[in-house]
Amino acid sequence: MEWLREIPLTFDWIMLYAFGFTATIQLFWYWFFFSRLAFRKKKKKYDATPPVTVVICAKNEYLNLEENLPFFLDQDYPNYEVLVINDGSDDESELLLHEIRGKYPHLTVINLQKSVNFFKGKKFPLSIGIREARHGLVLLADADCRPASRQWIAGMVSGFDPATEIVLGYGPYRKRPGLLNMLIRFDTFFIALQYFSFALSGNAYMGVGRNLAYRRETFFRMKGFTSHYIVMSGDDDLFINQAATRGNVRIETCPQSHTLSLPKETLAKWFHQKRRHMTTGKYYKPKFKFLLGLFGMSQLLFYPLFIAIMACCLLSTIGLVAAAIFGLRMISMLIIFYKAGKKLNQSRLSLYSPLFDAVMTGLNIIFAFAAMFFNSNRWK
Image (cartoon, rainbow, N blue to C red; front, side, top):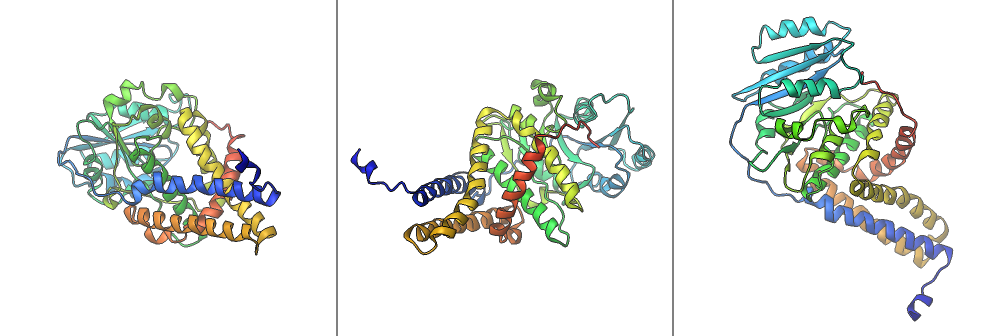
């Protein structure tokens, strides 16, 4: 143990050791998890076209339904229905849906009264929709998004083989001018990079409800959302956290299988959305809370430690070593993010990853802290 006595233990060296440890965690994540998506080869797609029910929950979504619903109803797929659950809307959604239903026989509408949804969230109407679905495969989307192509259903369904129960899709936000839009799109890309990579490692822990497919029988076997009904969010990530196994999940990243959503227009609206989404993390399985928490902590410490080292040891050996570690991590990030971005049709956005990664690290601290005091039980 003589070698331990030779290790420098001054404050600046301790900072370097801590910085090296956080960088090691980051590099492990990039090359063990994220590289699975970045360097993923095309997988065999299944040509079967089983009947599908597309389930969309809507509450006061007249304008979104008017704009987006025709894209769901005009899919290049032989046998499917679109089921819209109108959750006690105060606007004229019911009249609009009645009018559209007259033009599209494969549209089914369920109108719920205001007093029916006791939980004021999406899980109850979604449960009703899945229960009333005519077909064994359900494909979920939101009223404020649209399919990226007429092959959306075919693309998502091509991920199902006899062993697959869940297919995770990607739901990016539409490109708009401004820095906020770029941040929202980068955040969405990074979240997808995480849950796709974890799924490819056999550790699926979440999906997004605006583009998610699973077998109806799986929903019933897991007793729906009963284990987390009290949580407003989580109809997507908490259900996947509960239902996913090492062998029953596949991902679908083809651009034709994406859904496109309108991003929030203001920082305040995005803040509210992110704060609500972060309330579900504490209900994840312990394994995922540990892994995601470890990575999040490494991100939280990485930049402050590097700045502190550069401030006091810029031209010293410690500073040069820290700079080399920082450079290695940044090069790894650019390679992985660019390759993954090409898979998700976000390669140009991924080039801004060094900047947005630092900004999102700070913002996520604020979002997470605010989520601790967020108790709203309203969906819309």
